[in-house]
Structures are given as C-alpha cells and as structure tokens.
Amino acid sequence: MSTVGNPANIFWHENPVGKAEREKLLNQQGCVVWITGLSGSGKSTLACSLGRELQSKGKLSYVLDGDNLRHGLNKNLGFSPESRTENIRRTGEVANLFADAGLICIASLISPYRKDRDACRALLPDKKFIEVFMNMPLQLCEDRDPKGLYKLAREGKIKAPHFVGFTGIDDPYEPPLNCEIEIQLKDGVVPTPHEMAGQVVSYMENEGFLEA
Ligand SMILES: Nc1ncnc2c1ncn2[C@@H]1O[C@H](COP(=O)(O)OS(=O)(=O)O)[C@@H](OP(=O)(O)O)[C@H]1O
Ligand SMILES: Nc1ncnc2c1ncn2[C@@H]1O[C@H](COP(=O)(O)OP(=O)(O)O)[C@@H](O)[C@H]1O
Image (cartoon, rainbow, N blue to C red; front, side, top):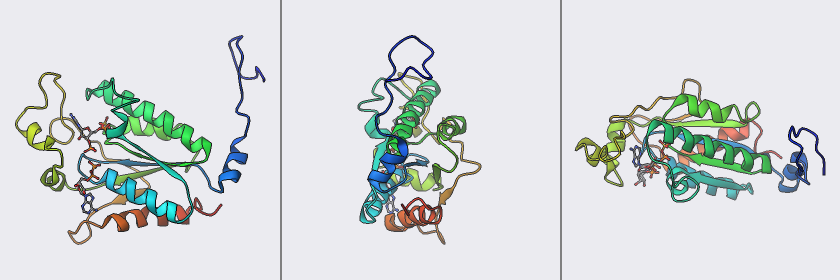
C-alpha cells in the first residue's frame, strides 16, 4: 500500500498488477473504439459485428451500448443536453477503465456533442481512442426507425413532458472534424455489418493494435 499521489490523508490502494503486465497476460493492447452517429445509423450493429470479428482473431472486447447503459449505470439520465453530456462523461470514464484493464472497449452511443466526445478522447493516451463516425443520411436512419422514435419526434411527441429534442430532428448532431474512421454508403449502398467491421479491423491492424 502506498500513499503516493494521494493528496488526502487516506489509504490509497494501487492496482496490484500494472498495465503492461495486464496487457501481456491478455496478449493485447487496450483501447477504446468509440462509435458515434444518429439513432438508427447502425452503431449497435457495427459494435456487435466488430466484437465478433475481434473474437475470431483472439482479441477480447466489451461493448458499452448507450441503450443498455441507460437501463443501469445511466438509468437516472434523460436526454437534455446536460444529461447527454453526463451520459457520455460516465461512459468515457468506464471505457477508459476497460482500456486500462487491457480490453478493447467498443462504446456505441449517439454522443451528439463534439466537446463531449473530445473530452472522452482526452482521457486516453494518444491513438488509443479510435472514433468511428457512422456517416449515414438522416433519411436512411429515419426510414429504418427501428423503435418508431423518429415518427414520434416528427409528430412532436418526444418533447412532452420533458421538453427534450430528438437528435437529428430538433436536437443537434455535431459530426466529428477529425475522426479516425468514417463509415459511409458506397455507391449509394449500405456496407454490410461484416464490411463495416472489416474497415475498423483494418485500421486497428495498420495501427498495430492487433499485433501483441
Ligand atoms: N430524445 C432522444 N434523442 C435521441 N435518442 C433518443 C431520445 N429519446 C430516446 N432515444 C433513444 O435512446 C438511444 C440513445 O441513447 P444514447 O445514450 O446513445 O444517447 S446520447 O448519446 O446520450 O445522446 C437511441 O437509441 P439508438 O437508436 O440505439 O441510438 C434512441 O432510440
Ligand atoms: N450495415 C447494415 N446493413 C443492413 N441493415 C443494417 C445495417 N446496420 C444497421 N442495420 C439495421 O438498421 C437498424 C438500426 O441499426 P442499429 O444498429 O440498431 O442502429 P443504432 O444503434 O445506431 O440505433 C437495425 O434494424 C439494423 O438491423
């Protein structure tokens, strides 16, 4: 036990196994793959497909999906700008812990505000935060409308009684300026989940994340 770095006079327990040792035990490097985009853009689909693809390469990942987290860790949060910011902050902190533990953490959240995503990026060392932008047209997402929420938003039924906006309709989505990966239509066609995951895996391979 050490008290180094602890400003308060309380006990401070250091992690018994260092980061380098954890990564060696797991035979992989921890990082965060942050998937951002509109509701219905395919974030969860990519997260799932990527997790499977990594598993087939013997790499361990864990998915933090916005929808799921809102049933537990973030169940007290709504969709006001402040709540979304807190939702992203908490998820970023947890993702950072997973990465520190040596896992590939795949976070899939709308995360509509650039400053919130940038704050998550700033938690990790350079290159360990891989931002993936699901650059899908709003019309496509709205046509998919898997939960019927776009329809409700167009009818003005999302606002009441909480006065929140729906992302892409009456709440902004701020696209990344410098993301590592952009998933988009090819000749007007949606890439398959396997192709989307392949694009991320190729990037990770080129950057040496899947070598260890
Ligand atoms: N007002 C409003 N705006 C946007 N999205 C809404 C809203 N209300 C509910 N939902 C549903 O919640 C899912 C998004 O949760 P997130 O945690 O990813 O959102 S955020 O990052 O905090 O903006 C999102 O799920 P996904 O479709 O998986 O993205 C929506 O179905
Ligand atoms: N690459 C894809 N090809 C075909 N259908 C897709 C693809 N990506 C997503 N979908 C479909 O679109 C809908 C929304 O995808 P989802 O992953 O739930 O989006 P999000 O998590 O961004 O809300 C789902 O019905 C899903 O099956």
